Length: 117
Image 1 (tube, helix red, strand yellow):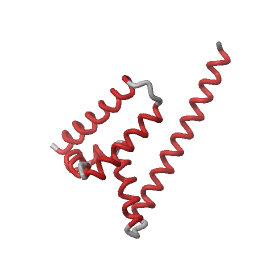
Image 2: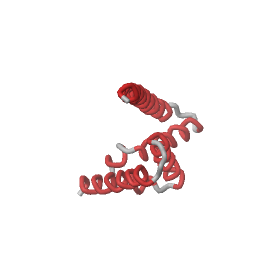
Image 3: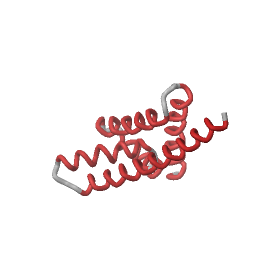
Image 4: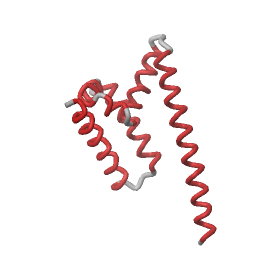
């Protein structure tokens, strides 16, 4: 049942995010930043505990879970704990590296497409 819950919650949140991609005219970066912020707000309101309790690992693989890590990292910093902050910084650096790599590849692809036209 644990796998079913993870699949259902992860699939539902991915579906909602995909609907945002399709219906809004925002960039991918704006939508992904929005999902990160939603994870932060859900954690601040205390609702993320229910989501992570229901979905388990299906929740931690999404940007909503990264928002929870961001919130907990900053809350831990304010309490004087540095381990959650280090975990968040590692996640942030990883996402930044993926974003820069994707941006470089997209820029090269667009540049070659413009030359063909």
